[in-house]
Image (cartoon, rainbow, N blue to C red; front, side, top):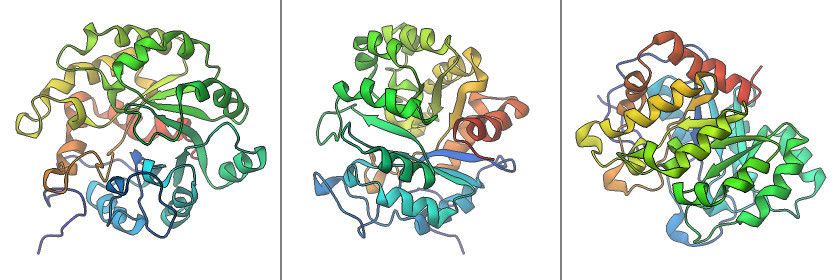
Length: 290
């Protein structure tokens, strides 16, 4: 009898085996026990920490990074609770905060497993933060050893190149840096991110293949390979992989197959030792896993 996995099409397990200590460095937990903000349409049900455990068992990862979702605003209780539920020894989190956050709250978040803050500015609707908040917050979290995680469009990255160059802390770009496909390396943002990566503290998440792919699942997301491989060639020590479960941008009828997404990493990174580095060693460093 096959198992139905919440927010994931298909039932088979990946063809490739996750190495010991493999990390899913980008997923979200939604839970109605915690406060909701903004449009109720952004809520995803059946996407709790318990639901995610089924997906974790399917793809074989042992470590997890929970990223605060938009619907829960700047109340990071849902993410802290998920870290505790999934196991604080092998779970970390990325919070959303505003400049008025107290030092004591940042310390509490750190103790709860938070290691970065996210600015989801790809679309302005219901955004909890703004571009003017990035630099002052980056200054504060840099002192704690945290990073800033950016979900921005390619045009936004190019337009804020000077701001990005001033940031003192580690920068993590979501979802392959959201460059338009298939000609990602032609867009000015590719040069901006590439120059930032030369400084030794800018990372890329190999995640969200379905977000900008024109070939889509039917074409095996083939048009993502060139940009994913370019990011790996530039700095293989500063890329991590994430599932983006429960795939909140996708309709219930159009959820991707997480086994396919995990196996896609084998096409992006054919070398097994390098894949292990991306799945195990790199996230251990970025997210402070012992």
